[in-house]
Length: 452
Image 1 (tube, rainbow, N blue to C red):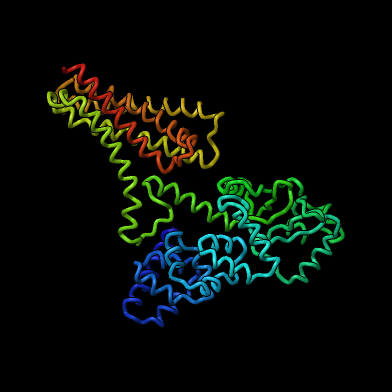
Image 2: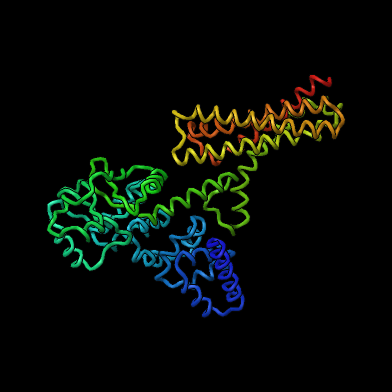
């Protein structure tokens, strides 16, 4: 219900905004636009055609530009950045958190990065360079350096007085990080314990020691799994020697989860998760042409297999009518298994230890469904064409293809990952080829033996 209400509100914003743009009332557009949150402004910009988007971007208040750019997809952000002057890009970085600033600077020209670094204090520059030194898809690239650290020997009263002196604490702070003098990680001091325990107790007596820090080189999808399974709000990040580097907060992890979900969905169609809805025709056509070409090659392979049995098809027209049923059922069954495997791999639920058990289970599911639906389609085909031979040939092919589809759906993602290919991107194309070839070969091969 809440998701529907949010979608309706977004559509309402878009209609009002578009109407205001078309009316030429730019003062109303500017007021309407800058009254939204940065993420809402970004959503509006992504929903506009290119010419209207450029006009709307000019009306965004300079103080919002940095946050808005961060919420845009890569394709849209790159297009807007190309049109901005270097001094505008430098100004847009003002006030950004270190992790957000690192994400921003990865997309801007080197000259702008240099200007931004020169405009920062030495301490902030070192923090930013620490984040930029790690790949974007690791914990180090995701972390923020705004940590609150304490020593184990001080009392809770001293810590409280220190926080009052600071007057504010970083957002998403649920714990203070306990470190040695050389910044080696020791544990966490929960804000709840700080406020409720005896102020004369030392940090070392109260702190939690059994929360393991996150290695800076851990992939971001594994970081997301940790936050999900352990209900973290924030977590410390350390280097290979256990020295504290920064922390990751739940808001950054939510972005990772959303990006992973977008990636899985869009990759199934051979698209990038950062695809611009209103990208230029030439650009969009070029990106999609690659996978259309791959799909054409696989379709030609399936057609070649059909051509091997043209004599049987010419003799029994019913074979041509029934062929799509075998291929379609195999494709759906294989896609079900493929989706389960890709999801299991993303969540770390499938490994060498349990892959065989999963494979055997999917084979059994394929066999059971194959037998059930083979019976159904055999009866339909027998009544339709009044031919028992057609009925049992179709039923046999159905069983073979559904079992093969289950096997292919389980094996293909694991093989693709071993060869360094994204299973979400290439899995469906390979699977379709396998189910088409196996289905047509089984159906037309048996039919050729019977009728020729």
